[in-house]
Image 1 (tube, rainbow, N blue to C red):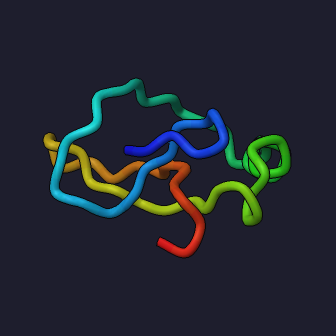
Image 2: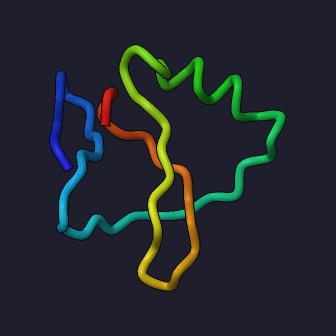
Length: 63
């Protein structure tokens, strides 16, 4: 994880990141992406949790 322009974002690597997981209704994703600045400020990508579940995360663009 890095901080870019004052905002945290994930980057590819082998380390761990601790956080919270939220269930987001599908109809909310477009508004959330717009608020988070996807695809300019962030990209959205999938990552696997230690328990095997897959989640969507906001990460550095182009990764």
